[in-house]
Length: 106
Image (cartoon, rainbow, N blue to C red; front, side):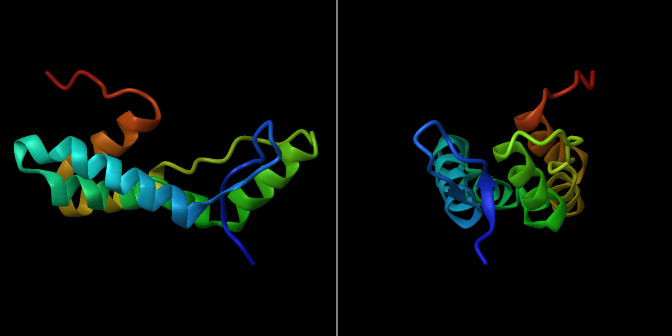
């Protein structure tokens, strides 16, 4: 059974989660290269949407595609928590910031 990253786009195509994570990781690696953080950024890119692996997220996408009212599903916390365990609070904030905004930590 495929695991999807997003619901169907206007052309009716879906995006596999594995393709989305790899693409994001490669893009993040390129952004991190100039300051020597390419490997960290690649790893954070792989982890950023781990919450989309859940059955709840996949059901959420299905409901959205069928225009069925459904509560939003938090998909950012699992990846943010994982990166935070490895890289500390700032690592967690990087993943959360990708989804929302990075708070001013002083």
